[in-house]
Image (cartoon, rainbow, N blue to C red; front, side, top):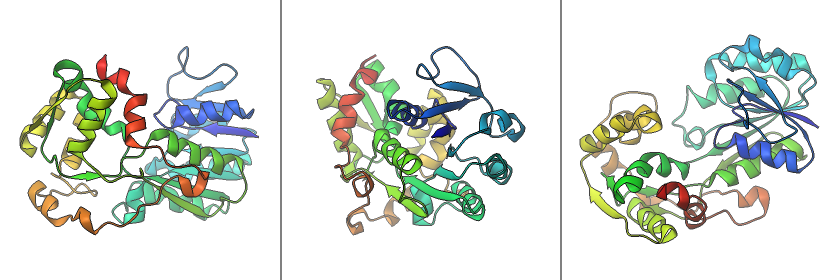
Length: 290
């Protein structure tokens, strides 16, 4: 099977590429900029940009299945090109926010375009990425062994990126997943305070937790740049999923974690227990030390 992976150098895409190669598939990795080491040996690296569909023509030729990174603005054209090229199966990297009803203008439009195509489709909807903590807390842990957090007793079910990739690979390569939307979470509800403790245990070092205001956390994230700066307002409750202004304190008071029941994990698809946050922390301990 020939499979095109878009977002191939991203946190999920690179593991999807690796697993597909190990399974013996003909893999093409789409990236906006080709560079040495961008993909494993034997993978055909294709330069292309989902925001510029005209750059995808060569990459789609002869492809059987497509792992689609979500870009809502061009989804209709990209999916149309895939169908014209003979792609028969599309797996969308979507979001658990679609399941919860929060996402109506980012991941959901991509899902709808894929469903309307008439091709086989599967949506993979992860919740909170455990990797977010490396992006948000990593700089201060590396520099000072401290986490500055405005809501230490808030929390969620952080999911290991490898669980997401595992489900995507199965949906791309096996029968029986067409027409399914898989919402994926980690197996445990963990407060931010407990997550800091688990990272410290994985590193074998003490990490101090310092409680700050949402405004102070926002300043910290903006100064860090990258993912933290780009997502500061949403992650800290200054704006809702639709980009509308909101009050961080009101958001925190309105959400009752105790009301949550069991959350779906990758185990329902893979048949293996979902990876814990402790395992994720051990896998990434060196990245917190560097």
